Image (cartoon, rainbow, N blue to C red; front, side):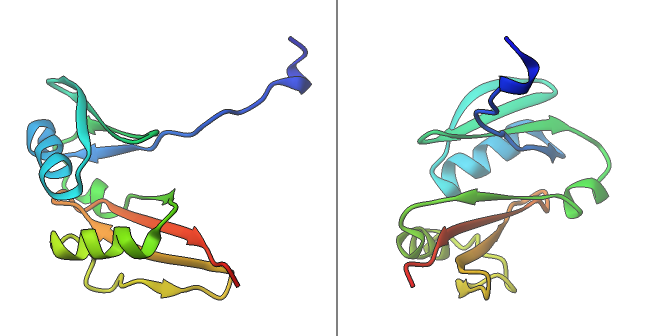
Length: 122
């Protein structure tokens, strides 16, 4: 294949975890992801076509400086679901951004921030 014709097909965030088992449990119980792989120092969760990978660290500062964004369809419904489970970041309520995205932020137990967003219909 000609290198100029290569196509990028998807990105998968790889976030830091202070305890792989606890992280997988948090995503399963609080955010309705499914744990699809677990190793002593690595874990993977999935929800629909989205995966998030986790690597083990003992440095609690790393997840505090880590984030990713996931595009969704039905951000209002997802926001209600995440609000009910108590994972929405205190400073991350659902808002309309000036660049045409409705988004909110979730903070996991390790300190990773995940923004969920949907293009505005306006």
